[in-house]
Length: 367
Image 1: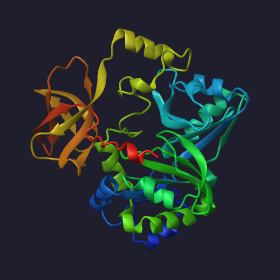
Image 2: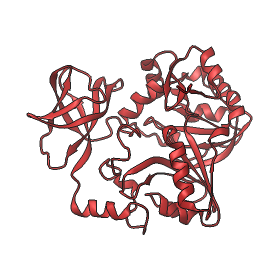
Image 3: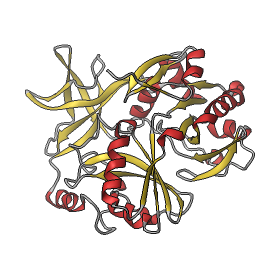
Image 4: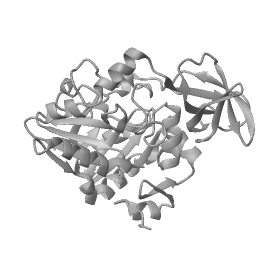
């Protein structure tokens, strides 16, 4: 059995009492002070995550934009320098090879942040399709990625940035953070305002320590995978390998707004066009429990006496103080009430719109 890989900041996490778990081949901090405390810090003040397990693939060359336009489901050519977009790599069957964020660095220079479990798959797929027309490189090894998330994230980060932090959502720029040249993006995976900071792996400790010190009086806490999971579920954000994978299309997953079917040809487009025109057979739905019990990933979902699905993600939502979950259900199903099978009993749940939690946006905090 292969030992899990260690993050550049592993020793620092260990020194501040992190509890670890293996995730996607990495030894990751699960929690420090406790999942509920870390979740609350992100919703009320700020949390600092080490997400250096994520991968980064570079695509460069005069035809890089046109290449990615064919390879991804969103409209790459709508991006300008310093902008980013959520997108996905699709198979020829229209299913998701991976979901990702694309950053346009320059006219012929793009960075793709891909899921940790899909780095080699996404890289090889892109390189195979490029056939030398553009340069595709795996930049993951030299990168560390930190995420500061929460309503106080902007004010804390501003303390250690020498330049003005005037970034709108899904914008990015190279800024000096705690004395280290870093690419800062106003993106995240928690449903809160925040930033993801790309730094050289050998400088990650400097930036991590600088941020924690700057945010000490503002309630900033280090946060682990446990809080990241509860936060993203509340925000209705999908997890590759659970809610989406190579058996699901973006239309089934409710990602329609990120699929540019009118942009022209791209891999998987014909399947998605047929699916949109011919009608979906299933759709990802959100639900909240109406009876006691916590819906866990893998639990069966019933409508009357028929099993109609399986919980893809589920758990307790601390901000909402209730159990919520996601499930693919037949499109023709008209019932608003379902039952989740919890320890050999069926507990009632109610279908509801996503996201479960939506933050209040303060224009003053948008920089």
